[in-house]
Image (cartoon, rainbow, N blue to C red; front, side):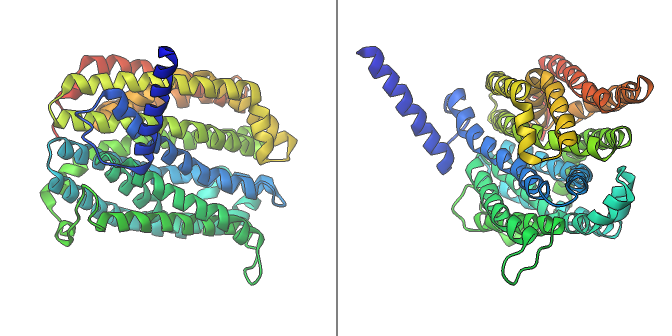
Amino acid sequence: MSQSITTKSKVSSFFSVLKQAIKGQEVDLTAISIKRAIVLLAIPMMLEMAMESVFALVDLYFVGHLENSSHAIQTVGLTESVLTVIYSLAIGLSMAATAVVARRIGEKNPEAASKAGMQTILIAVFINLAISIFGFLHARDLLLIMGASTETADHGTPFVRIMMGGSLIIVLLFLINGIFRGAGNAAIAMRSLWIANIANIILCPIFIRGIGPIPAFGLTGAAIATSIGRGLGVSYQIYNLFNGKNALKIRISYFIPDWQQIKAIIKIAAPGILQFVIASCSWIFLAQLVATTGGDHGSAGYQTSLRLMMFFLLPAWGLSNAAATLVGQNLGAGHLDRAEQSVFQTIRYTVVFLGIVSILFLTCGHLFASFFTDDEAVKKVATRSLQILSGGFVIYGVGMVLTSAFNGAGDTWTPTKINVFTFWLFQIPFAYLLAKYFAMGPTGVFISIPVAEVGLSIAAYILFKGGKWKKTMV
């Protein structure tokens, strides 16, 4: 009887924490138990990242059933590869925002946290304007550089123009969510992605296939729907920044440039942006290598597998973001040991999650691929890619959490240096060697990915145990 009562009590406690996590009640994350703090942050963060990955999957699903779907799938995939540079900017800035805001919240200084967040938004707007204009003007050239055929480039240019032209929305969506995560209010970040995705799911079939007075835009309709959906998500974020109901209280004066603070934020964000640019450029090179050695079907299959992989990896990334927030807030509160314990507890949860994902890809990869395309050649490549990539998921999860921990502490240079060695000095040459010299084609590229990620995780663990990150000043 006592065992039954204990079980019911644990179940009741879990649902209580789950409700609190989704509702977004603010608590002092540096004072409650580490496991409870991780769950309160991780649940909304995992759901947030799952929703981010849904964007690409929804687009992929609808365009994958269009006529000449291989061109459409390739365009979506290659555009996402180009957009990873935008994501790098967004993630690097959001990383800096999370680190600074979390540190100020840990120090019990919400006013400074609010001002830091707004200064980061100023930086994002100025930088992204130039990128948006360049991407819009050179959309077709970008597809050709990525290895797309002339026919695919002609077909996909309007899609790329809309996605690149509206890239500021992408940056703001990531950045403002990073501000809320640093403040410990991951539920608002989660809900903004829910709103954006629900809108995208509703609008995609309308703009792609047409309805009533709205014409069928085909592939271009996917870009229209995604941009509108993300725009609605950003609108929800801005509302919550200014409604005065959260720990962050925004004033108009916070948008006046504070050059000293901007310099401090850039000092953290610059290596963070570089960190993800390094990884992104590696992914772009791999995508181009697959396109040139595997043709349109090989490229489409690879892009399909990447979208599926990111659908499952992004929730794990959300889980690792919990470690970043806890590290930042606990360092701000002076709890160094608690910061380290938070990281290793998060690693345990991540390993379990990605272990399950690996089994799913190894056994059901062909079923996942079949859902997004009817082309047998594309499905075959996607299935092989998923099976190979899943081999490194578990250990990659360890590296993912450790990297987030460095970034949460404001030590963005350490993972940047790891990325230079892992991706540029090892992964790219190794992939080229397998794909070209040993004539393995796309399969050689697939093999290079988990091998490189294992090296990244080992290097991150050794440097994390060294403890230099604990002394980072933000």
